[in-house]
Amino acid sequence: MTMPHTTAAPDATDATDAVPDATDAAPDATEADATTSPDPVIDLSNVTFGYTATPVLEDVSLAVDPGEYVAVVGPNGSGKSTLLKVVLGLLAPDSGTARLFGEPSRSFDDGARIGHVPQRTDAAVGMPITVREVVKMGRFPHVGVRGLSSADWAAVEEAIETVGMAGFSTRRIGELSGGQRQRAFIARALAGDADLLVLDEPTVGVDAESVEAFYGLLDALNDDGMTIVLIEHDLGAVTDHAERVVCLNRTVRFDGPTEAFLGSDAFARAFGATVGGIERVAPGDASGDDDASGDDDASRERAAASGGDRE
Amino acid sequence: MIDLALAPLYRVLDLWYWVMIRLHGLTGLEILDPSFTFLYRAILMGLCIGVMAPLIGTYLVHRRLALIGDALAHTAFAGVAVGLFVNAVLDFGISPYLTAVVVAMIAALAIELISEATDVYNDVSMAIVLSTGFALGSTLISLNAGGLSVGIDQYLFGNLSTVAPFDAVVLLALCLVVVATVVVTRNQLLYVTFDETAAAVSGIPVNWYNRLLVVLTALVVVGAMQILGVILVAAMLVVPVAGATQLARSFTESILIAVVLAELAVVLGIAAAYYGGATGGPVIVLVAVGLYVVAAVLGKLGDALTDSSAPETDAIEG
Image 1 (cartoon, rainbow over the protein chains, first blue to last red):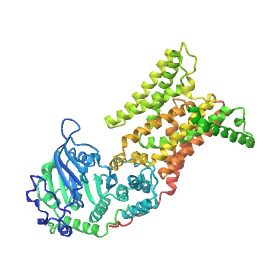
Image 2 (tube, chains in turn blue, red):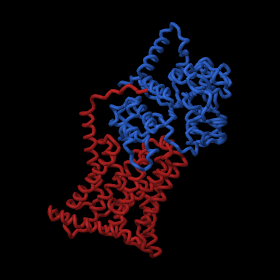
Image 3 (cartoon, each protein chain N blue to C red):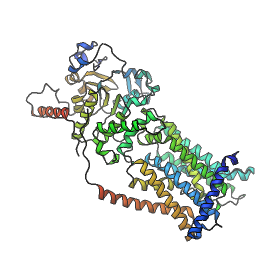
Image 4 (cartoon, chains in turn cyan, green):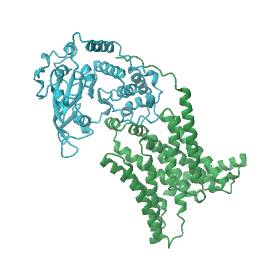
């Protein structure tokens, strides 16, 4: 279920091709029943979109299967956020097709299946609203104009506990740190029983320690079968966690497993030479370097506990 | 037809008179003297405004649309002028408040559609709508000045003493409609207010709820105009909400506190205006601003006293 796609990416020649079982990129993939491949969660084919005559996205094809953990990276202005809007059906492609769970994205109406974690500045976090009230919104697609039933409330409380925010449910969202706030947004998605989590640069302005805990949470959710699509600027964080990287700059420059991305020069060509954090080597290639082993310790800790984020 | 629909509300008004008379019997307050039934009606209308203005205002303020009340009030003023003009020129008997509602609603939808087309609410377009409305209203009134002796003051500043039973009953109906609409759509309005993108992703037709909100705003603005006047009507949408934001923790709490602050402002304001011989609307607004200052101070004190032990986040359950 977690097979990376390799769609026409010129740099991905070293990545495994269409036959899923032949890959060794994801060791835990063998436990998935790869024989019956379900409908892709996200299916863009030859999507072109522009706000003006100049296309922001050009001939983008991308398919994401259930359970995948995909990071979309790319420089500023590369069309990442626009891509997300097309995926979510907020924008209609000028040409090409966009499908969500097998339906055209624009007319897809089972909104509860999608959890959206906004950029820091996108939600009105200054308003008086508690964590519980935010998480409650996840149930709104289910309840419509009715009030929440006790089962709905149970889902809300469970989601808050899952992200480790039980002590904060009556706090105003504006009083939280950046990392805690993003956890609340994830809880909102969980409360709605979303099976696709879409995050738009979720860790901008979040301190490093909280970022690690945040990605630990995403890892845990992905292990439970949640499909995750993430736009991220911090390449280091992405390559530590995502299974598959899509490098976007107007069109798809690279699409393949994270290891192959690190080995390729796709990022350098897409981002230019100025990007920091690129020197980070793939785990396993690290030998003897102090920094690298420190990173490994950190990721082990994260995998084991994921209980940080104390501030 | 309309009379039939409003008949139960006239009974509510009679009941209100009876309550006020009893209250006068108990307290002996001069302001509640049964010979001033216009004041009874003014108080009832003030109380209605005190419910619906902060209710709608809470959604507006947190969407950073605080200015829209002002813009719509000024276009409503143009609507009043249109009504007076039509009445004078064509010898109609149309209520200026009716034309005000129509014009304010058109302006509200225009603002909303412009913002949908340009993808942003901007204060420039609202400032343009505001000035256009006021300029149009002033022009029509100056054209009219020769043939018409109606003082425009009551529309600009509000007037407690001119409220007829019909006005009170209409406002009562308006209040019921606004409150019922918000109660029914509270989930969607909250989601759209807090996080428009996520609301759209979750399948809520965001644009329709935005249109609903601006139309409700237009209704509230025109409804409140008779008491508060064009220039001050926006204050009741914004000031109590700003005060409640200082004190409230949850959204529900903030709506309740805003309504309480607004009702206090209305009751104290009308009383102060009566005993001081001042115009009601401005005094109500001054009291509201005073309450806001008190709320802000209390809010800061509360923060200083309670802000201590932050709970720890628990481990994440996989």
